[in-house]
Image (tube, rainbow, N blue to C red):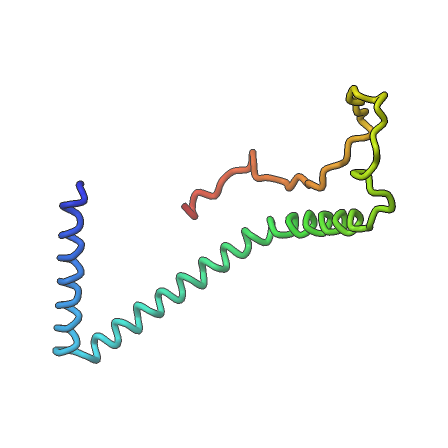
Length: 128
């Protein structure tokens, strides 16, 4: 549907809802109050259940994340010690114009940690 058709339909629905709400207030205010209470109670129950399910799912992933965060913070503390010699202020001798090849031992380790993924595990289609 094009935008020209959808926008008036939305305004029409909002207008009808407002008229219905006003009509319910004028004719049966206690019924409206009960209906709003029941709707709010159902919404609270659904949100509570959804949060519990998501907390269980996130609990499995958060332990791996916390482990990786601790390891990362330890590496940052190690690297935070000040250097005695500033390497960027050294004078390079003129004999060394060609770049030196780096060996595997010279390469620094990355502070990244692989977190166990869910690849290969069955998805729970009930939540979708």
